[in-house]
Length: 182
Image 1: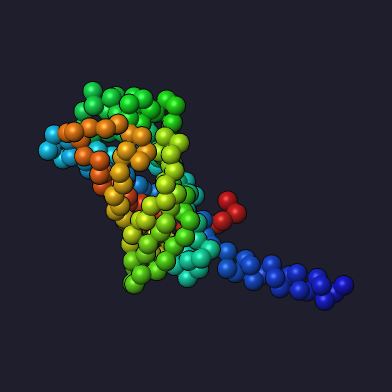
Image 2: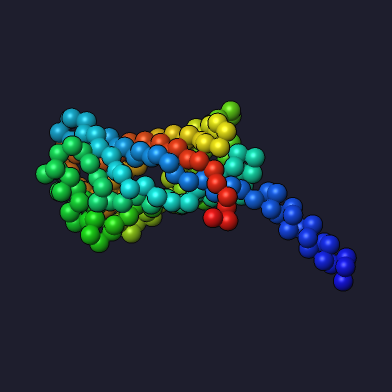
């Protein structure tokens, strides 16, 4: 019995040693660019929340899940923002969040990584690749990545002869490490 107890304690100690520190989002930015009538429209979202457990030393055990509040869309034009919240675009009342959930990660070189994420907008989910940088300084980390998606893959905006189908999204997240048990 004593052998089993010792083995269990040793196993729990090993698991705890490799447990990742939960990272708290301290600052975030989700910005997008799309061409409409030949003009680049820029905007962004606030309200980014989620769970980030990313450890470059244990990349296979890393996990990221975030959601973005669709009601926080901001293009510095209230009329356009209200239109983008409507059912023709993000339908913010029915679909209050855009979600991203990690599927896998790979280390490219230095501070450069790539993640495969399940991106869900308006109940439509597709896997996307997000190349990003991740740099730690003490108990804080900064990440930045850019990806392109097709808005019609998510039912945003319908068909248009004047609005591009391609959207460029830049995500920046600063985190601080904390105790995973919190």
